[in-house]
Image (cartoon, rainbow, N blue to C red; front, side):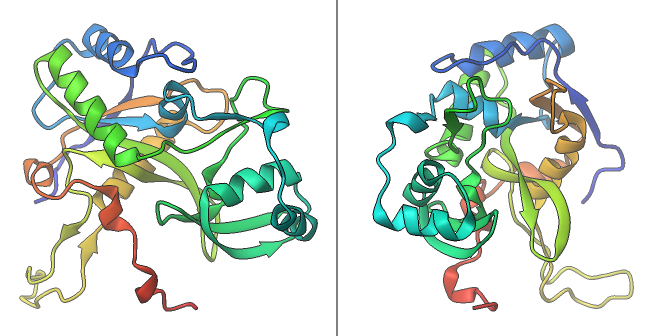
Length: 256
């Protein structure tokens, strides 16, 4: 079922994305220049940051009204109260708060630091912050449809971000939005090499592709926010395609 050869290639020629700039024309032009036509099993990996910029998810901290709750949390985690207010506005609950650390459950279900709000590679970052897309799965679906209209073939689309992980150092690429790709591949019932049936194995395909893509994109000033993954098994391109399916329900949280 897996591919014997998977390639990941940075897409050249993506300009600095500004608020309100449509992504699909930029991506379609860059993909056409570099690859000509797309193949039926291509997946376009897109960094969250350019999606959020395109959707104008910037917040000016100077315009933020800070609540008493935000001031209390900010005092405990020693962060800018305005930033904490924006984090709380994007969150369903605070999971952990410690000096310089604020882990929350984002309204989309992701458990992450600072609700994914970022100031790196953001113009005027001393006073502006960038939020996650309002609905990353919907953003991925819209981009996939628009690319299909322009290129004659709709590639699968995965929107990626970098998350920290419990009990592991460092950040890792993860999928926050997807369309056209099986995000969670259920292998339960398949046999291993000795004939034993798999009982719990479900593969986070979208996350694994996002992690691979992050190695090509980089995390600092590389300027490579889009990667084309080629060689994806066709079986991965049919079925449920939402990153929402990867989020473990709160009722299954065994660490509470």
